[in-house]
Image 1 (cartoon, rainbow over the protein chains, first blue to last red):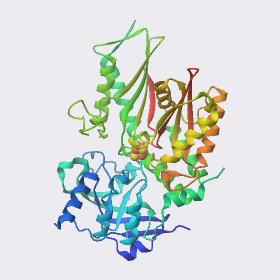
Image 2: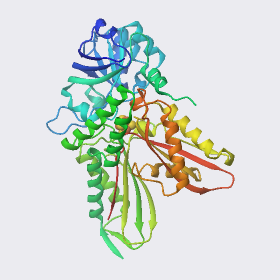
Image 3: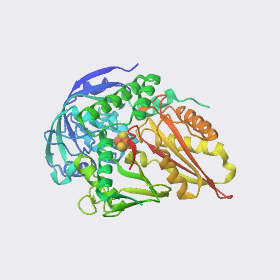
Image 4: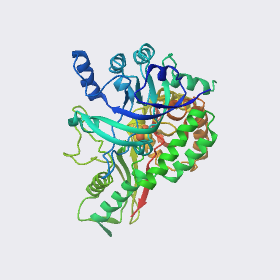
Length: 186
Length: 283
Ligand code: SF4
């Protein structure tokens, strides 16, 4: 039976190890946004041993490319983007302390293995719920790579941001197991 | 010959784009509500609940429903007794698209295929629109519009079968396409199936099928039955909302069927996500 948790970022190993695929989590605190182009640069910095624009330890990365904000709003609509484009970068991020990712869609085995090895969680946010999720983002500040436009790295403050645990630290996969549970075989 | 000024078309197109960006059509909203009630999985139920909340917030606060505000796709029926004055109809539709997307803070998503350079400052903001024209009798212009996101378009497929494949082959093919797609097209989805015609006729028909209101009945009883059969089969896959497992994978299956060549049976499957932003106007 799935449980519901309210967690505050940064996430500790204790936070992530209790979670099981299918759990619902409401995240409060800071999320960092990054998509493919930003990931590429961050991973290059890690490989060169240089400082990152934010502290990776316990960080949660949100894969998102928002709509332009209306005047007065911190951000526009901001639902998750498809995650597999980050598959080649995520294991390095997890290895160096990041503990959560938020996106939509399947991850490869290397990412799932990295979640087990480094106490990471892959969360699924509701794709297409951009208005709702954008509203739960209280502030947004570009902290690196402004030239990437919607793909720049932003520091977001969120309150009760709803996500589901897809891949946990025990090797479970909600996309696979959830589907098997409800599949009607011929 | 009835005359319609260029600016009237621009304004009408702009209005439907602005409206569709934030207001989920009633047919889709009602279908999601029913899906939430019918869903067996608590996780998927919660996801659909968020989708309904999202639609309410988007409508009340005029925020885009989804950050992928899509490419603008139009099916336009032009009466043979109507003339647009002061410019081309196609240019008016593109201008309305650009103004609507820009002024409503919708995202510009058109780009060069290889350099991936965004076209907003060169060709125009979210231009060019995808426009399919048809000429019909009368003095009116009918414009059907949908915003088409990338996630659901990416999983769409077409294939030309041998005639012997028959209905059975089509049901199995649609099921295979949706199974492979999993959660990527943002289920609960609408499935457009184009059957017959030539290769491109099938794909255009599958796109147009997505413009039909969910809950409307196919006038061809044979196709209506096939739609039900495919819907039941697709929902047996267990994919559920956002692929998290559940009984409500598709809200509807819509078929458009055409006569075809004696040697072939083209089939196209075009998928629309739960954010099925579609509308139509007659000018
Ligand atoms: S598939 Fe639809 S709901 Fe999902 S992200 Fe794309 S446009 Fe939005």
